[in-house]
Image: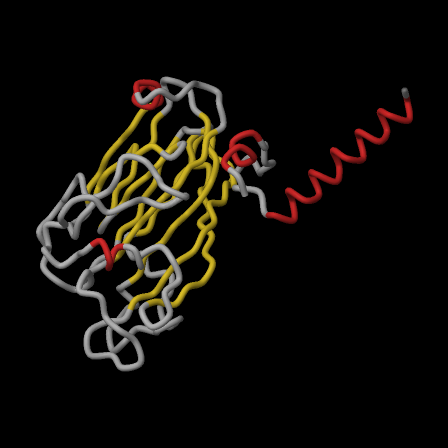
Length: 246
């Protein structure tokens, strides 16, 4: 689906919940047969490491541009994080529901974020399935006074209109960052305009996993291809009706 269609197509939602959908990928843990472990997972814990990724997306994905403080991540390894790579990861769809906690404020909060326990490669002899990445996609618009806050561990990057807006990379305890609509305007974006919204997350180390979002941004789900097909057919039908009227 093109960026143009994603930015200009409005998607209906409910007043009480917004869904962000995407793909979660499970990676092999040390000592497990049948898959190849990447050195990125279950290494040292150096803390927050900003500047690891490109400031813009290429073909919808970030690019690894600087050394991870663990010393274990490479560009070749990172290239497998958010794409299906047989022998290294297994994938499944995932949807997170942001619920309206107060008028105009939507949240998702988990202090034990293990959405693929006993799935894909399984827990691999641990209490939870710890080693995974997640790419969520949506649409968003904002006003200057709106805010978006994330708190969690480990790596978290958010791109809006393909521009890096939140950078919480590295293997670290729970870290927080808030951006405002004014921050996005400073990046060249405009109020009340629908933009692509991409979340890239990685859970790389035992034993905690936190994932928390609170926002007043106007979030929407990316339309499914079937929805886009129906929309296209509807537009074609309207065009036919207009021709008949003429």
